[in-house]
Length: 115
Length: 117
Image (cartoon, rainbow over all chains, first blue to last red; front, side, top):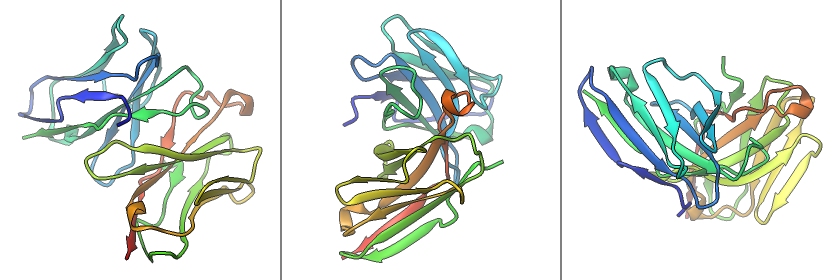
């Protein structure tokens, strides 16, 4: 158990809909990262929040947004869903800002299926 | 543009033998390299890392080798055990000391390792 929790585990929805994925980081971790893993793809970095502030964006679509709340949990909002958004979405947390030098602890992921 | 490449989608080895997983990268600004292991229905778990100032790092049965001139790293598992069967991801980041922005981990697509009893 990494200490990172993600809800829900599975989500099935229809095209055009909007969903929210939730992540609670490990106790004491200030950074939260979101990744997308599509079929036969590696993990693609989406966005990074540190202590409530956005720090970096990867290849995140404009239809996607995220935020980190004062209690440090984070939500990833996906809207106007398309079939291609079906993927595993992982959240990870780390203590600080040293990407690469600090271990990122991953949650179990949310499997999203868009029909 | 795939900056981190794991060209072998799968690898099968016998228990007790050595497993060698390979990873190539193209970005010369990468200066931290990591290996993550992933079991089905779980998130990736950090395994071992190496800084670009080193060419080898060991942790028990796991050793990572880095060849900067060839932009290549490899993960050696000796001896391999059935419990090592998982998908292994190589990842890299470009730190500020190397002129990079250090803002993200770039992952390869993974190699499925199967260790047969």
